[in-house]
Image (cartoon, rainbow, N blue to C red; front, top):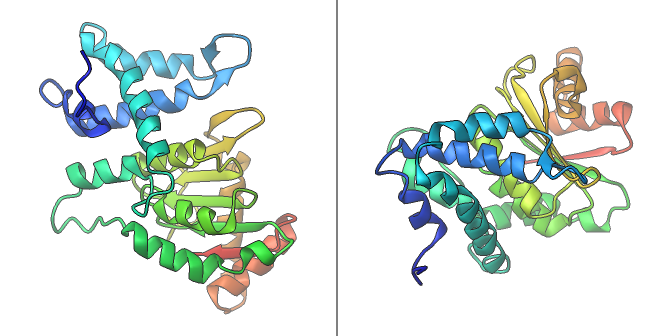
Length: 258
């Protein structure tokens, strides 16, 4: 019988008795991203092989049947917290409580501060008729982007970069589950424009979170690289040169930076 106190956190913690919890959390993110990226009418994921490869380590353990239930609980808690003052970054909260060690230098901005900063940066976006590109170059779990999208709305484009692959996956899944489909999240060092490891494009048609393994196919990588090239040619404030560069690379003529 299901416990009334069962939460996403307690369900995840059930894995800790047999597995490394951080590795299992990362596996959950991978399988969840595969699960939401279905081939229409085929009854399987675009990344079926990756899903099977990830779940294989749990094949002899009944806990393998636990993953879909954990994902279902995640979506329920995110929905329940959608209009709550603490935000609905359930993934980021769990990561912060379990994996952010003291003095590690990794820190997620609290939701009220994210909301405050989003009002400052994106407060005028709704009045603009142009599509805005909003970038967080150190996105963590995507909390700042979620706050920005709360203010600006889902019609704009949201981009994130992080050097931690698990954080990139959290951001991609958070954006997808919050309906921010004009988005991309890149794994790489934002201070090094040539550093591209993998990227994830969040899409509605087709529906899913799609892996981009070739940097030349990544819209975000091109925008990021071009902004650095522009900066080396003309010494201007960051927002100015990135905005000018975007005018040359697509219809969205403005960029908001967190």
